[in-house]
Image (cartoon, rainbow, N blue to C red; front, side, top):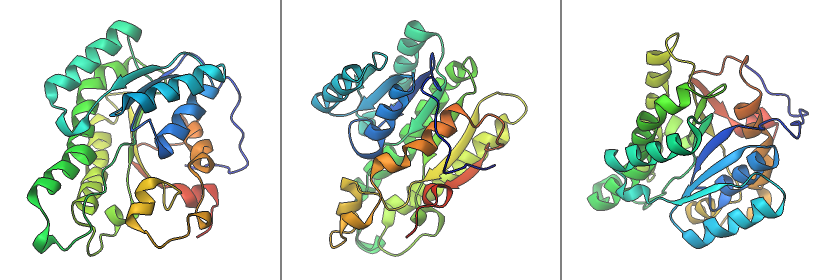
Length: 257
């Protein structure tokens, strides 16, 4: 299991593949969606805001990438029926998907658990954990029909080492790690679908700015700096034994800090 930071993705690395990206309208999700499309993938972009999805569509097609599919999806309200409806639409359109990136996350309040609002707790857990479970469950047959299928969940340092005041966000990310492990264990040797979690680390995003308002964003890598690792994972990691892996993006990319 390894990634060479000097690796360069071939232009046609993902030609013909279909990859679903949640939270695709901004930050890391948007950068990865553009990167996947630039290397041949048909991106299925989920996000809440139609205008941002439309601008992503324009960027991808304007750069000559395959026409993406954009779909307004509110993960806060997503239930099993919604997930199954999305799966049927993708089956009708493509017959399979080759990758699923669970990028969308909600930070929630940074307060002690003793005063954490239960409604906020439910929203964070729904977006960060429950929606990923429901989509993965519904999309699993489509993934099993795909090429080198990978489900990549987004984790966090506070999911692996929880700290005070991170509340539902840390709990949701710790649970995400467990979800990845269980999916990988249960489907090993009976399904071609691989599962992994990726901790992007500190990155120049709106969520990072909300969590660390006093931090100088210029000290952080941009979302685009992480894209080569995502390309490798979705397009070149078949023989790298990453099933069930916990990946730290900055360590794998050789980014300090």
